[in-house]
Structure formats: C-alpha cells, structure tokens
Amino acid sequence: MTATAPTPQLPAQGGNRRFADSPSARLSAAPAGYPAPMYPHLATEAQHSERRIRSFQPRRGRMTQAQAGALDRNWERFGLAIDGTPLDLPALFGDLPVTLEIGFGMGETTAAMAAADPAMGILAADVHTPGHGNLLNLLERDGAQNVRLAAGDAVILLRDMLPDSCLAGLRVYFADPWPKPKHHKRRLVQQSFLDLVLPRLAPGALVHCATDWEPYAEQMLDALTVRPELVNLHPEGDGSAWTDEQRAADGTVPGYAPRPDWRPLTKFERAGIAKGHVVHDLLFRRI
Ligand SMILES: C[S@@+](CC[C@H](N)C(=O)[O-])C[C@H]1O[C@@H](n2cnc3c(N)ncnc32)[C@H](O)[C@@H]1O
Image 1 (cartoon, rainbow, N blue to C red):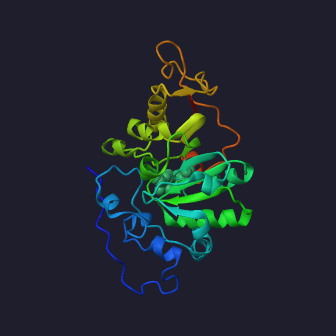
Image 2: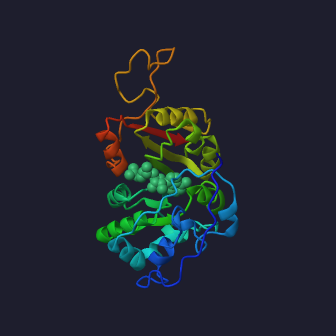
Image 3: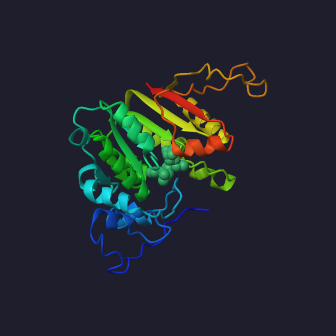
C-alpha cells in the first residue's frame, strides 16, 4: 500500500473561537486523520500531494488547555514549521552544537536531556501537536533555552531544510515499530533515511537509536552497520548473556550498546517494558 495524504479540508470557520488564529488553533486545525503540521498553513501544496512514505501514524490527538496555552505563549519563539524553508541553525542556536531528535512524542525525555545538557542545542521534530504543547510547557517550567521544536515530517526537514554537516547528533527513540510485514517499508530507520541523514551529520556526530521492538532493533543494527560512514561504538555488545542462537556464526554478539545513563526513560519505553519487551540502544559515530 502506498501512503497517500488525504486532501486537506479547511475547517469550518468559527469552530474554535477561543484560539482563533492562534498558534494552537493553526497547529490543531487539521482534519481528523491528517497530521496537523502538514496543514496548508505550515507546508507547501507540493509537500501535501507528493507521494512519499510516512513513518508516523496519522492520528489526531486531542490537545489539553495547558498544551494549547503553552503553544500560544511559546510557539513563535521556539517553534518552526517543517515547510521546506532552509534553516539557519546558528541563528536559532547560536554557537551550540545541534542534535536532531526525531519523534519526541510528549517530550519528557527531550526536556530532561535539554535540562541536563544546556550546552547542547536540540532540534526536536514531531508531527503531533499535543506533544509540541506538552514539550513547550516542560521547557517553560525549566526555563530551557536550548530547544527548538519543528512541526512536521522530519524527512522533509532533513531533505530540504538542513545543510550538510550541520548536526552534532541524531536521536531516534522508540520510533513507530510498524510490526506488520506490509508496513515495514514505513519504518523510519532504513537505508533511504540514512541516505538523507548521514550527509547532514558533522564528522564525529553521535547517532543514538533505541527501541523496544526486537525485529526493528535488528533492522536498525543491520542498517547502521553496513554504512561505511559510521562506526559502532559497542561492537562487543551490551554485556547481555547472548544464547548460541543469538550469536553470529563467528561467535560474535549483536553490537547493541549498554543503555547510556544519560538517556532518561521515555513514555513509550515504559509501556514497552511493562509488556515485557527488551530495550536495545544503538550508538554509532559518524566518521
Ligand atoms: C512511538 S512514538 C515515541 C515517542 C518518544 N520518543 C517516546 O519514546 O516516548 C514515535 C514518535 O515519532 C514520531 N514520528 C514518526 N515519524 C516521524 C517523522 N518522520 N517525523 C517526525 N516525527 C515522526 C511520531 O509522531 C511519534 O510521536
């Protein structure tokens, strides 16, 4: 099945008087089933109609008053639309090295990592508006200045908006696992994605992925390992007692990383662990 975007329909006028023409109204005005930031306010017509694989679930989350309030107070300062316009990272982050986080969800992990390392700029991308509101609330609470939120598909951000060698890191935590075989092509971490992302990484940049979906972890490990631009920081594995079946024919173990103590538990990780899933981290360095 090829993922095609539904035709955006303009919302009825006056449907949301309280936030009419506010950032929260614009960001949440998308029709059901259509990711809000892809709405015409925020993306070009060409991007709407182009046929490309989408790695996210087209769902419409309900936004709380607190999230809408945070969007209205802080979006103009900290938010940007993924609309194809090239970004000036020094203008956004000053001298800070910038790590791109794709899929921050509700943003708890992003906020915690931003607070723990104010010398790192975080360009945090996701498609879902309630998460933007939630993260803005957390950043406001912490007084954090080192995060910018990007609304829309990170594939467009990487493809059209970032120059080469501009990123000091990439984080992809608990990307949608797309478990059904017919949906595997929608998994974010695959070669076509790495073709886009690797040129944007500066030499020495850290690539950090984590997932609780074992087959996706294996796919990530294979995809990252075959790239000559990347070096696995933990080829010796994470210290797990791997069974004979899990070892490769030459006796080596999968090159997952031990969980870094600086990665806070994420919402989806907690849910995965509750279901008995095993979490794998992958840490690679860009040559
Ligand atoms: C399963 S959630 C994980 C959220 C969070 N990292 C966590 O661990 O709690 C995956 C997130 O990635 C986002 N996502 C998936 N593909 C994306 C893309 N191409 N661009 C931006 N966000 C994307 C989804 O919208 C979703 O919020």
